[in-house]
Length: 138
Ligand code: IDP
Ligand code: MG
Image (cartoon, rainbow, N blue to C red):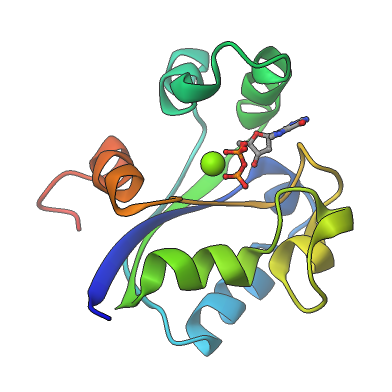
């Protein structure tokens, strides 16, 4: 195992319901160091660029509308094995399939409005961290 950085987002549904503090508490309690964090509202162009790998999926248009419906919090988090450990802490994409105690099980409203994002591989983290943060910020 090595120290890794991953890109996380707390998504609009969670901020809408004021759950960001509880989610950040879980991040810190589970041993992640937050090395950068900011709240912002994505533009349509930014949301489409971030999720471009899903451009052909039937849910893409709805996903981009949801992701621009309110602010998000983007975070860079550091820890040994951060990428997989954050995916595990979030749980399955669909909260009805997520394990007990995971963020999506406890906070998500639906498969789309699922409260959190995490890079799914070192390659994704390498693209997603600089999508949000300059070298000076992370
Ligand atoms: P992930 O966030 O668990 O990596 P992805 O398959 O990469 O899941 O999908 C990106 C995001 O798109 C999901 O987190 C969710 O918000 C949304 N999404 C994925 N699949 C569906 C679906 O079948 N219906 C509606 N929204 C979906
Ligand atoms: Mg994904």
